[in-house]
Length: 240
Image 1 (cartoon, rainbow, N blue to C red):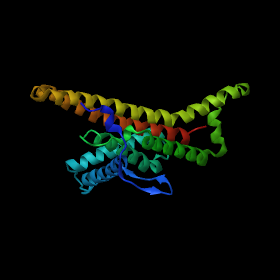
Image 2: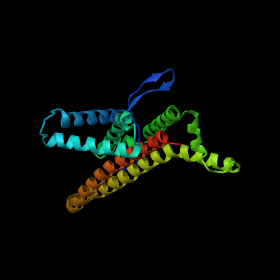
Image 3: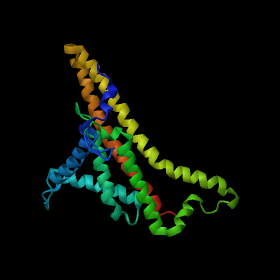
Image 4: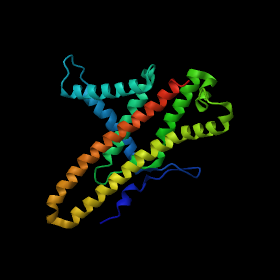
């Protein structure tokens, strides 16, 4: 059985060097591109025909849109409309990054800290910009809540700053670890089934069930990631 960790190795597909900087196109880059294509393609297929009485495909597309729209509205509140395209894009990117990684010989870029961390940092940067734009310098009161004695400032402010900076880290680690653990488990069980040969028919059904479960986890983790991103932006919008 091959090493289950090999599926997380980033490999060069097209070497690119610019002034000593490695800008190579890797398997991670490929599956990020594929996730964008799949996300745009699926949504286009679902809603390409705007019917007064929606067919099944349009109903599914509207259900997905409506579900994420409601999530963004509930988490962000007033003014959520301007952030919805970002929230919707993050959901599609993360979901297809998780889902495509379930296929044999594919690559799960959502198991890597760099791309997921970049999404988390982008969400954090948006929340900072939104907070400053909405509340001005008063946004910094977020790190020293009203009603707290001034003498507690040396303790409270560092704690609040650390808590704020920990948000993108926790958001990243939660998703990355879920993807790594799930895919390792799937790889190990699939390897055992393969080694059993003809006797592995029944265990193969277990693998099928596990793949369905991992598909559900891919959807759930994308939703959790999107919801938390929405909550962080909502906190910036309505901070006081």
